[in-house]
Image 1 (cartoon, rainbow, N blue to C red):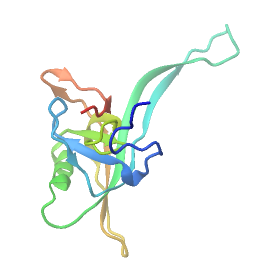
Image 2 (image 1 turned 120 degrees about the horizontal axis):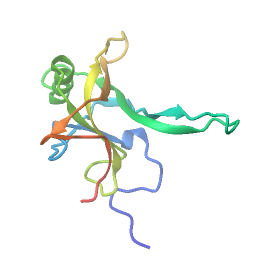
Image 3 (image 1 turned 60 degrees about the vertical axis):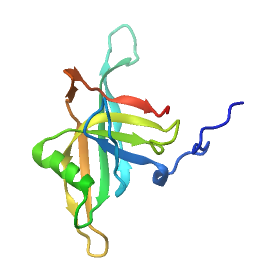
Length: 160
């Protein structure tokens, strides 16, 4: 039996063990860790069409379009914060980012997750009296082209 890759565990990863990255490009990514992210949620779904007829008393369905989004809190701090600036600029200037939602560090062989081009559409700022300030970013799939090719979401597995 081959040895497990370094940093890999057979146990289900905890949220604290997962990683969120952004990158300005997909083809030649320079991933930046979103280290201040908290409570990351990535809804992934697909639509369905009903194919009912009088041939059966059942409701057969077929898949249609897939969707992906990303919601996460970000523990904001004052001062220079390149990650916050990139996320804010995605909202303010309608710029796309590539999001990498992985179950481990991008330095660990076997780490995997969905990669997709997105844009920040929600930017609510939460200032609770007895908690640190949090920005709750909402990201939706964006139309993104690199070298005239449409970049679609894909499943990424770290191999090197």
